[in-house]
Image (cartoon, rainbow, N blue to C red):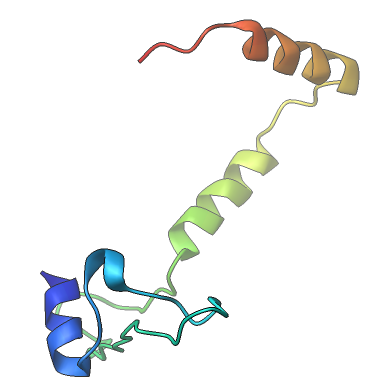
Length: 87
């Protein structure tokens, strides 16, 4: 729905017809839209940047991590690579 809205407002392509700015063989047909909102919505005391929660969670996980030797990590990766994928 968002793609259709953007394409109609920016007069750009939809779906497989979209060509990005990094495609040197075709002119760009992608449309970009920036949506602005009031950051201080009722009931919320702060504004978070995109990805802030994931970054904070990763930092907390790293702080609580258990050290693993490189030999053990390499062995675990090899074992995981040898296990067939289930779909």
